[in-house]
Length: 291
Length: 282
Image (cartoon, rainbow over all chains, first blue to last red; front, side, top):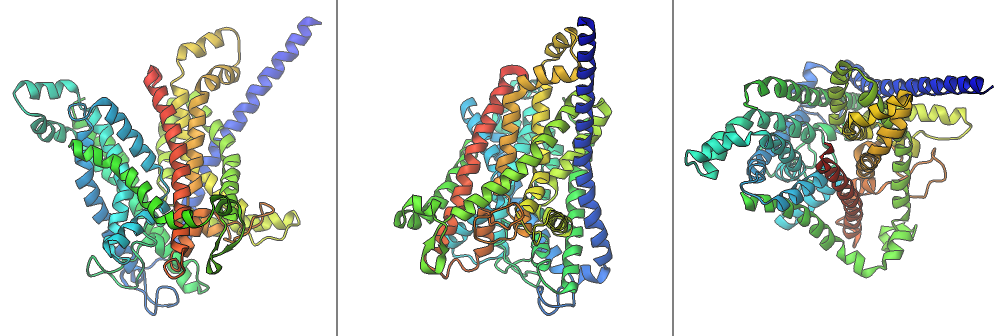
């Protein structure tokens, strides 16, 4: 009797293991399938909407109602916005990432700063949008390329710094000590030794931040505005790909909706390119760095 | 460079301060309980009751978490405990790619796929719905939080020492029993932190939800009804906010609520994870 009961229990335990395995496989398949499904649907809709003339023309008769024209305003606007913000976030991000090294910052401040940056990374982009709007009111700016760049920079900075800092922290202490023992100052060591070591990391971090920045809609919704034209100065409003999708899908006119699908495909293509490039660069570039 | 580091912290403080200053007028002119618990939203008459928006945000996030938590935990267990090394090496970057997809793409996908699906589901169940509903928002959000919950909880599970697993296995347990009794129990705090991070991400997500959730300012009665989360409220009304008195202050208060909730949860989760890593487990 007892042996029989024991046997039954074993069968049940093995059965539980089987069920758990099935659930696990089903879950991971679901996760991968949702990614594949998103890319497939956007690609299919986008490809049928896309054409060369769409890519090089600006909308005619208004982006919301006009049936003619293309999405060049959004492509160029998005590149202006995110490249501008990328430049600023490298400019401000590098000194902060370097400053987080032990030589410059005490442990406690370092921990607090990392925590702050992690929290800022997780902040919803609409909060950056609202804050960017407050800054613009304060500076007397209207919705413009400059306003969008400022807001996107704030959004991208935490990502940039955290990604850079991970690389800076990897630089071997011995390497820095050699430099110090030759009489170099902290600043010289950072600029000559550490910088050389983290250079590939800067590119990877930039790709990551750029990918986030170019895809974000909520932060530039009130700060960059939207326009049919390509901005000629920093103070003119700028169109962008995410907002091109967002605004143009909402119209009842099929021709305009096609422009939304095309914008989504172009945006997805750029973002995927950035993240795949950063993945490849990360692997290739790390070969030339001392570890 | 130390000044630059201090500047990074100042940014967080500045955002909070800016939002507080801007929402101060409405906070001082209306009692807080009325702002948070009244359902009357008539900006033109000066009535600002955030209750439907707060409930909308919480419900859409709750649906997302109900879908995402089991799927993410099973996936993370598979990747951490069962998957061969090369499978893990392939899937990890794929999950990173999912994390990088812009929210407007999720929103568009939702409009094309999820909204018609929910409409069909509603018809099957005999509920009249346009498809633009709490459920659609929840489904989209759940996919958006997959990457963060999976990657963080997987990282935490990998920090459970291999010896602990071996000890349990040597007692004759099955692999799944070891996972249940050793891995999950030891990694529980970290897994909760991962879930909290996912929650915070979903709580403030704007564009993707805005595109599928319907945006009707009323407390929803079922998951097939539309809702109006806080983030959508801000995004939809920035145009009028400067022309109606107190409206800008009310929207800034909505942003402040989002900021405080997300910052609070994020600080807790990251602090927990930081302590786990420092304990030498990571």
